[in-house]
Structures are given as structure tokens and as C-alpha cells.
Amino acid sequence: MIRIITLAAAATLLLSTGSAAAQGQQHALQARYDRALAAGYKALMLCSAIAHAEANGTTRTPQSVEQWELTGIQSPLDGIVRTLGYEIVRHDNGTLERVTVGWDASAEPRAAIHLDGDNGCALNPLGGPSAFYGRPANPAGGRRVDPVAVRNAPAALAPVFAAATGNGYGEGTRTTAVVVQRGGTIIGEQYAESFGPVTPQRTWSVAKSIAATLVGAAVQRGAAGVEESAGLGYAEGDPRRAITIDDLLRMTSGRYSDTPGNRTDPLYWGGASIHEVALDWPLIDWPGTTFRYANNDTLAAVAAIAPTFDDHSPSDFFAKLGMNHTVAETDWRGSYILSSQVWTTARDLARFGQLYLSDGKLLQGTRILPEGWVKYVSTPSGPQPDGPFGYGAGFWLMNRSEGVPPDTIAAFGNRGQYVVVVPSRQVVIVRRGEDPVGSSFDIAALTRDVLAALPAE
Image (cartoon, rainbow, N blue to C red):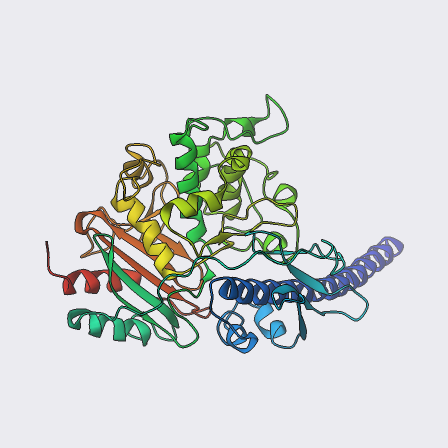
């Protein structure tokens, strides 16, 4: 008996020692991974913010990007990003070629490369050399630049704009732009220093509503159907084949993912591709029975229509709407990251919202979304999220917000990106920000105040 107890105690000691060693190794590995992600975050944000601004005929300095996009981000990256050095490499003609960020003396730096054409910046895979893509050709010219005169808000909206650009709708929030459009005409806009009518920012999850709109355009062309299988799974008989595009747009696929919400770090900052990390998650609940907000569902919906992009690219769609300062970026394999990685201006987002006020028609009357698509995206179906907002198909619903018209739909994005569409008032409200983690902008209150300040028509 004594011998047995001694052996058991020894085994326990070995297990404890082994566990402590494993935990130590895991901690070191996690710390290394966090530094690599932080370097990817910094490289991509610097590349995209600077390259897109310059293509639009304006500028962003690295210091401005560090002040806005690279502060107040999620832990633990926030504490790492500011410590990492970077290099901006330009072509002979002065256009941006790439941004590299060192993170470990023994490893290749992370690199974000400004791609040919109008594809923005893409992040190299972890371990990939900074010349992973080779040397891109000089980007071809800038985009068309709108008149940049700011349209000051009328007196009735001035107090609302002052509150929005201060802390009137959330302590610690940082507003970069507010635009109010009515009947297709901007009636007021205001910008923070370093920003203006042609200064783009990352949309974050506002891109999910853009993705749903691209799906709608494919449906209008007869190239897709929302009730069709999204083609997930290995082969026929795989239960994931039951997941439809509609399930994906409504965040009810039933698939598991590493975290709910927006932490798709291996893709966004690690340089992994969509096909590697977003499409293969297992089914944990039957489609249509569980709401789980996940980037991977939007990415899978886009993958289902990706074969149509050769003839109907996102940039072609943006051009039809007059969104001339909007770019959908890709992973290093060329797949669009339309859950988050779109760069656009506040004015372009107002044009996007106008499409839904026009029932899916362009201003000249051409229909590019199916008849009834606005009702489709704004109708809750199946399980709903907890909290103050409902969810339709790629759009949030403000039908639970007191004092807001019940037909109001919205695109929401990380760090305070909002596009609010109020069909009954023919109003679009755009608010851009770089809100730090822990702060919250009250978009329902801003919507109520804007509508109250506008005379009813």
C-alpha cells in the first residue's frame, strides 16, 4: 500500500511538473503569436490607410494612422503595436509599394503589399518574406475625386453634429465623420482633423451588409438563389450541404467557430486565407435554429457567389453606385475579405444607403437588386440576437429602438462604423469612428436626434 501511494504521488508530481512546463511553453508560443498578429495589424493598417487616401487624391501620415487606427484596439495587440517599428517602401514614382513591420529578430517581417489595379493591400502569410508577391507594378493612377468642399450642417442639425463629434453619444468615443443625406442629397457633414470627404476608413463589419448586397445583385442577375445550398462541406451527404446562403446571411448556419463575432485573427492579421480558415468549421446545430454572429458565415456566403466575380466584380458594382472611393481588399490568394476589409468614405457609404432607399434601383431607374430585396434583408427570420437590435439578412434592425421608425435598418461595424437607413423618412445617416475598446457610441440616440431635427416631409 505504501508503495502504491508513493507511485501515485510520484505520478501526480510528474503530471504537475509536465503541466507547468506545457503551460510555460504555451504562454511563450502565445506571446510570439500575439506579436506576429500585432505586426500584421500594423502593416496592413498603415498600407491600406495611406495607399487608399493617396489614390483618392488626399493624404494620411503614418502619425495620423497611429493616432487613430492603431490606438484603442483589442488586447493584447494594443500594447504591442505601438512598440513595433515599420518601413514604408515606395515605387520610383512615389506611390506606395509595401509596408513592413519587424516583430522578431529571427523571423521574416510582416508585410502588407499594395497590389496591382484597384485591389488595395494584402497581408503576407506568417513566415512569408516581404517580397512574397514579388514587386507589384506601379499602381495605375488615382481614382476619380469628388469636389471636396464640406457641406456644413444646417442650424437645426448643428447641436447634433457637435454632440456626435464630442462625447455626446458615448464617453470616450472618437468620431471621424458624420454625414446626413436626405432624398439622395447630403444636407450636412462634419469631419475630424486628418479626415475629409475623400478620406477612406476600414468598414469593419459594415462590409457584411455590402456582402449581402452583392449577393442580392447576383440573385437579380439569376446567378444565385438565397435558398440554394452554399456548397459547404466535403461532398454530397455532408450535413453542411444543408446550409443555404440565406442561413449564412442571417448568421444561423449552425457552424461552430473559434469565437463569436469579429475575432477572425488568423485571417485578418495572420495572413491565412479564407479557404484555409473560414469554410471548414463543423456543424454543431441544425441550420436555422441558432443565431451566432460570425465573420465566417459572411465569408462563406461570399464564397458561394465568388465564381461570378470574374464578370461582376465588387469594384464594378461600386462604380454603378458612384462609390468611386471604395475598395474591397483580398487575402493573398485573391479572395475578397468581405466580412470586414473594405475601405471607403462616409460619402460613399451614404450612396450605398441610398440604394436601399431607392428599393434597389440606381438613380436613373435601373434595378440592380431584386424587387423585394429591401424587405428581405429587413425581415427577421428564425432566431434573433440578444440585445437592443434585431437582425435580418446581413443588416441589423433597429425595430427595438424606442423613438426610431420600425422600418430602420443599419450596417454596423467595429470601432463605431454605422450606416443607418430610414426608408419612411428617406434619410441615410453615416457615422464613422475609431472608438477605443470599452467605449460605445449610442447610434439609436443619434438617429432619434437627427430625425427630430429634420422637418417631416
